[in-house]
Image (cartoon, rainbow, N blue to C red; front, side):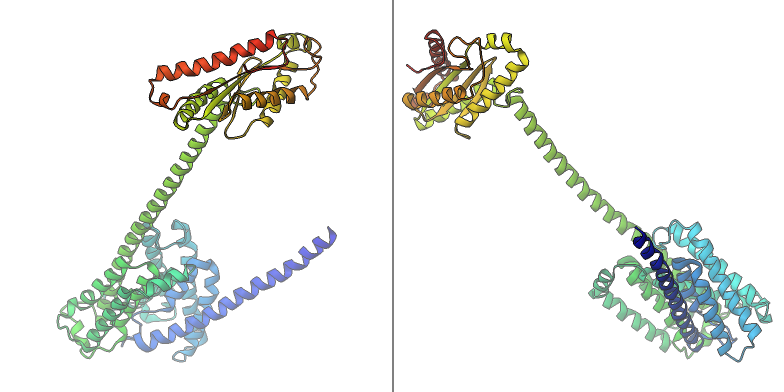
Length: 513
């Protein structure tokens, strides 16, 4: 025990070290990914006023915040600090404040989203989706407000102000990147690969490529409808036909293609008294993405409900099958109990009567003989009076067990006919063979040597047996039921008469003629 406690104590520091090492590795690797996404966002998505259309690092930090909680905050702080120090020669104070803004945004998502959502699955329900989007909007607002402490331009919140662009860029980055990342975390990779290899998915990607080409070449002249017209149908196609793991990357790439690819006629995005092109683009992209996510969640719920219904139907079928088997087993047990003598465990009179009628018809069909032996324990009433009824019950059980060992299993039938009487049914035995079998039955009980002082025939338990055998005529199979029953009764009556003859001749004997 002491050695086991020492082992447990020594293993705890190693486990703690492994956990700390894995968390440190997560922070450093995710911070590097954050930095790479920052570079990509600035190089491809930067607007002429210095803000960014889609700030992708927010999507990474918000996805991690929902999955790993507050451990995503140091990732965001470290990545934001590296990005701001390496961009444009920003001094340390400004870089720290902007990084704190992003970290606060991440902390808000980690603190509020799991609490307000029902679980951490973004695609489980519409309430989860809308709560998450609302928290993202609030977190982007907090990041913008904190960054405005060191960036005076971010205090301008009019329709063409940088503050609105900064907030919209952070929110759009989260809506573009967080759902794909969340959909791929902790899911079955085999199912994902199978879905990505579908022909329909390849056609969807081809349509996305053509959309990007259209945007780049500026072929569509109706500028006010361009983003929604191109993004919405493909996003809805992806959302309706595929799982979140396959649909969200498509919608994200579509959104990025509208901002990343060059547009030779950028001025066409402008219209009289409208927002700047950046705000138009961010608004359209967000509306398209949120609509696609809504359809995706609804479809995902439908598919999940359909799967649950199929599972429920399968479970119901299995339950019905199990209950049917249990009912059949219960009926079999009930049938066995109804056909079995409760004391001796052999067949009762009800079972014997049914089997005798069945065997009579079989013998009539095959023309084989049928034999019956009526058995009585000699002076059994005196046995009960001498040894008591419990001893009498044990005697009946021992006699039944001995007789059971001498009959042919499957073809013969031994039954308790009533009280101390037993009956045996033999198939295919002529009178001589039946008499020999009856003698074996008498001898096996005599060999038990069960004491019976009140038995006049001997000092042990003995049997008196009457045997009747009959060749059943083939034509009797077509006879009316009352004639068949008359033949059966005559056979039993003959065996019973010979039983009484055995008793009158001194008991402990077999009478067959």
